[in-house]
Image (cartoon, rainbow, N blue to C red; front, side):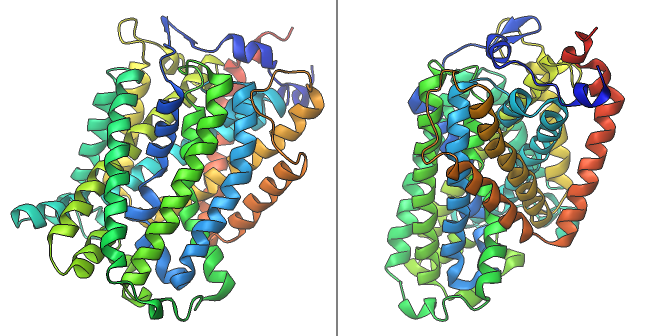
Length: 472
């Protein structure tokens, strides 16, 4: 077999599904219901774009940041529909990595998996970075003191090591090590709390609503809206996290597509409502991109004319960010689990602890890596790097739907993309459009990341691939 055929050899869909749940030394348990999967997806999404990134996106787009959230949501919707179809057809832990392996071949699957490593690890680190700011806002309002900047900010932001970010990563890891079902239950509680808090924020902010704050609506023009959309897009990756639970869902073919669609609808409605309330209560020129992490609690204080509204919002943000960290770390470990099972990364990532039925070593390694990122790298750079990795993976999923429909139309599908083939085609195009709005430095970093990934593949993945090992 030629090198090109080896690189683009696909893994049979039936085999991918048959291997689902199996790891070295044990199996994952199917315990998650539709409700838990939906909240898992919401938990991975709701919080980041509002509590942390909103303050950075508003200066780029002005009041039109509301449209930026809508644009990002529409872009995510086309891809979410494609994810829903593939999740219902190939219900495994690998998410878009496994989908690419079944449709576009091993090299493309590796590239997609490598992008997902960037997407998940960097996004959860970016979220954890903002946790310390909201923790300080909560402590200030409740006790009148704050943690020093040396332990709540990264070196690039005037700190030494962001210890607060590392702590939340370690707490999420502790929960994950207790099992998928226990983690899903904890996440459900977190999600309910943060939705209630965000609705409370809207109630307070709307009491100070001023229509003049929306004039001029788009001071930076279309370019500003697109730039802000590119930055907040990574706030919509939650449905990707839901698809990583394919091997731990009770009825994955039915529940995964529904969870993906429902979660995106819930999150988009909340994002747009909160953004409108925030800008209506505060002129967009007051948003400082360098002091954006606790912007909602500050707005709540101003709108309510007291410190207690900000206290409640800060508490909600502390819970919200903890939920995002928990669910996204989960997604990262399950993708690595699938890649390890295929031989593309070391076997340690697929080892399952018999008693807890979770990949313990995998989880600890991921937590250590994310802790380093969260403790040392500034938030803004992390957020944009995540967006480009997410968009690339989403584009591959859209193409994967087109390929699998043509190659294997007979496969059972729990959901079918409406208006095929227009939906996946538009999904891929929109991903490219939003990617074009990212800064040149982000593209350069992405190119370097991809180069490193290809080197890793040819040094390790290609030689250890189980699929390649079967070729005589």
